[in-house]
Length: 104
Image (cartoon, rainbow, N blue to C red):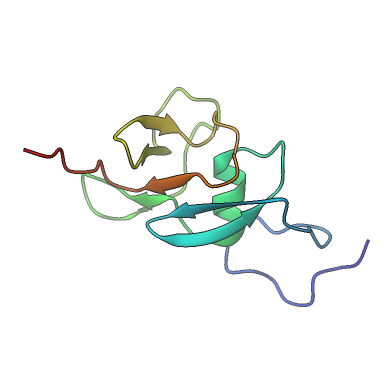
């Protein structure tokens, strides 16, 4: 185990270097993760927030961390809603911070 050279921009900082085993994307930004991690842990290790509050536009990073508050809600490209704190990361997941527009 070796310490990371520089802290990533995220809120979660690993105590040792993590080799990527999978990749997910949020709003088109690709981020590395590891099998067995939740979507939230992958995103917050690589970014400073999960999205923006629909009420005041401020950054959100989850709140309860147990699936009750829904503050970590994200959407898949097909419109399905997930809770990032309760959903396991899978290679190739493509998520967005706002619900995709339905085709008319």
